[in-house]
Length: 199
Image 1 (tube, helix red, strand yellow):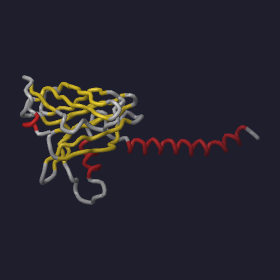
Image 2 (image 1 turned 60 degrees about the vertical axis):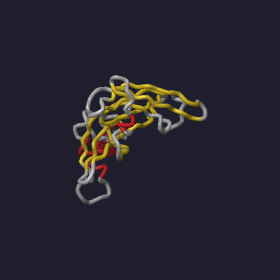
Image 3 (image 1 turned 45 degrees about the horizontal axis):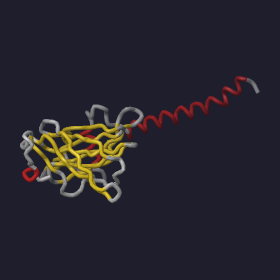
Image 4 (image 1 turned 180 degrees about the vertical axis):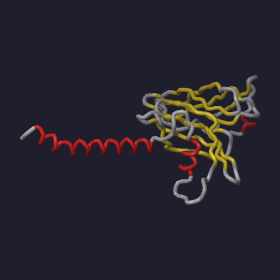
């Protein structure tokens, strides 16, 4: 078989493979489409929260703080609809192209969003919230399960109208949240303001 004939036979295969790779890259870019600087996150989150509906977006999304833990990114955001204001915690996942896709969102009433996050061998307790009025400077909480019993933790809260911060906890804990009622919040003077904050 001549070299020219071999080239003619392999050219269509190479073209098809290239077309497949280009299509896969395009599709991957459509899935992981949120820019690393979160610049298009509000629009992506509004579309995600409104999926399955034909009307306008259910919420206006206003990101307030973000925090990366490994390949996961968490974003604290105000979710605003015509009748209410909710505090949401968005979860994003980083792709090979350096951009992100939205994989989950929890929201509701109240001014705080706690969450236990697992990333590889690490387990972190994540806490986000509004902080305009109380000047919360630190928090404490207790993790509890049958294997480890109870361990209490304390974490610093960065200044600002909103915060999103985390502290690592024992990775052997299987619980997905702190012991109910154990989250306590303190102002800069060390006074307990939990009851006023109503977490």
